[in-house]
Image (cartoon, rainbow, N blue to C red; front, top):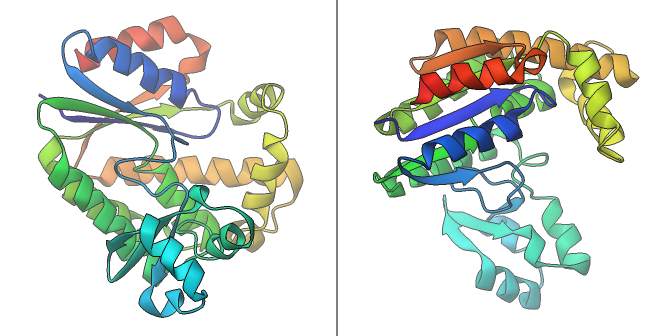
Length: 263
C-alpha cells in the first residue's frame, strides 16, 4: 500500500481541491493524514519557521534568547523556531532567519533534508499521508525562483528528497496546466491582494531578474518555465507518478481518472 501521495502543479492548478478529494477517497479505506499547504505545522516542511545557528542566537538579547529557547526545537546544530508564536520586534528579527526566503542555500539545504528525514523516520505506517505540493513546488521556488540555479541542481536536490521518502512508496499526481494565464486571472478575482504578492516574489527573485521579468506577464513567464522544468525533472525521478493534463477543463473526468489510479 502506498503511504504518501503528493499533489503537484502550478499555482491555481487545483492542487488544494485535488489533494482534498484524494484524502476523502482514501479515508474510506485507510487511516489518513491530509496536510494542505499553509498549515503552519507541516510534518515535512518548515512553512513559517526560522533557523538560528548558535552564533545567530547571540544576536539576540538574553530575554529574547530565553524566549527563543523555550519555543525552539534543537536541530542541525541550531534552533528551529516557529516565528508565528512571537510578536513585535522579536518577530521582525526572527523573520530575517526564516528558512524560506532568507537563509543562504548552504544553510537551508541540510535543514530541509533533515526535516524530510524526521518525517520519514517518524511516519506511522498504518497511515496514508496526502500532501499538497512540497516535493516540487517548494524546492523549485527556492532553487529556481529565488536562487536561479540550473535545472540540474534543482533535480539533484529533489532526488535527495525522493531517496529519503522511498520507504513510504510515494506517488506524485501532477496537474499540468496549458491555460496558466487564464487560471491565474480567474483565481486572482477570488484572492484579494494575492496577485501583487506573487508577482513581486517572482519578478524580483534571481530567476525573474535573469529574464528581466516584469509585472503580470513576467510572472506568467516564470510559471511557464517552472512547469516545464518540473515536468522534465519529474520524468527523471525514480518515483511513481501520473500527469493529469488540464484537469480544469473537465474536473469530473479528471477526478475519475485519479480515483481509479489511487484505489
